[in-house]
Image (cartoon, rainbow, N blue to C red; front, top):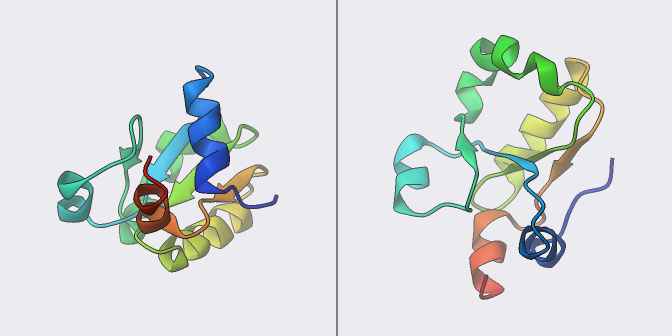
Amino acid sequence: MPDITPTELHQRQQAGETPTIIDVRETWEHEEGRIAGAQNIPLNSLPEKLDDLDELKDQEIIVHCKGGSRSASAKAYLTQQGFTNVRNLEGGFQAYTAAGI
């Protein structure tokens, strides 16, 4: 599945869409700033949260972190676990906020 740009995500949110967004940063990072509607599941907690996400296996999930590397790992992990529609937010939270969103 191709990654998603901050602009595309913002446009979809402005259009009223509510995609599933998972912030894989640490809790303290999420508390300092977040994308509206994102749920925080730190990368190292993903394995223990898989059962909670099972109903989303065939739905779009957008993962993000600070700059894109942790979320790339999360995308790869979720894909290996059978999730079929995982997209990484290009440039992460930094790019999303730098775009003035």
